[in-house]
Amino acid sequence: MNNMLEHSASRVRAVADLGQQIWLDDLSRELLVSGQLAELIAHDGVQGLTSNPAIFHHAIQHDPAYQAALPLLRTAHAAPEARFEALVIPDVQRACDLFAPLYRDADGKAGFVSFEVSPRLAHDAAATVADAKRLWALIARPNAMIKIPATPTGIAALEEVIYAGINVNMTLIFSASQIQAVRAAHRRSLARRLQDKLSVQRIASVASVFISRIDVAVDALLPAADPLRGQAAMAAARIAYADWKKDNGFAVFAAFGATPQWLLWASTATKTAAERDVRYVEGLIGADTINTVPDATLAAFRDHGVAAAALGTEVQAERAVLAQLAHQGIDLETIGQQLLAAGLLQFEQAFSKLLALTE
Image (tube, helix red, strand yellow):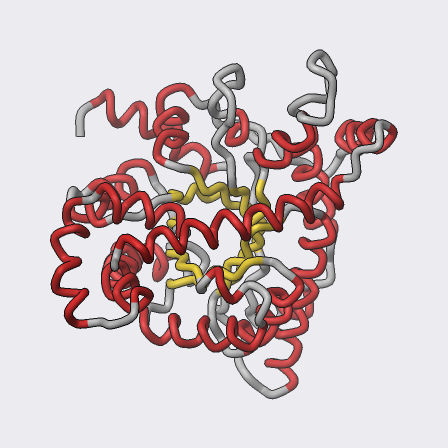
């Protein structure tokens, strides 16, 4: 590797030195075959990967390798969803295998690859549990992580899926109440395993808190010159982190070797050209967290990002921001519910579109 690459990669690696994992929010056949993912792991220190229906829709639509495989799959599988899984599950497995050495070296605390249950099951807890178990068995990798949307039924499913010993990424979290409910369900499942004399070791979970979409929604309610514009999401995230760090309730589970549920910052690409393109990466660096970033944001941080600790336990200024927003009639819980509904719809639509590509 040349000196320029070594120098640029050090910006991303420096984040790991501060205790935060950087994950890639992308997956495609080309990413694997080209060696790009292997290079990101080796040289940039990327420690995990997430996927979703929108990512796969784009990949299947634009990656020639997927297009070439489809005719045979149409013959082999009658159902579009079965074709989709036959198309991408091998890539999920291959990505898991690339991260397997990291997973082993980190004692099961890094190196995960997320794959989502069908978005069509978001309001059916029993079906979500069954689908999570089926996908876990199908992928058959210890560093796979099954994504479940943090609806009330999804949170109920989380308890059962963690109890089954399956790694879970709870996604589409937009509010403090969702974070609290996800944390509580995670701990209930661990408590049940301990009560039933089952191991709680090497069962990983993350709570994926979406960032930029909150600012987009809040800023639309504020005057153009309001200084609170662009402040809501990171203020809420920093408060969530401070509250998480101060919570000592996990100690009883840690004594049995359980892994804490980490906060993961998602939707960290900026939405407008006027914003610094790495602001949601730089502004949310903190120990024992994860930031999952798309290719463009990762490249931007590699080029000009600044790695410095940005999260702490003193959040008076952040609480003041939320108080000022509340004074203007902006309720982040209500906005969070609206964004959850919109996010579910977006993923359902993307899922329908990607299944249509297999027909």
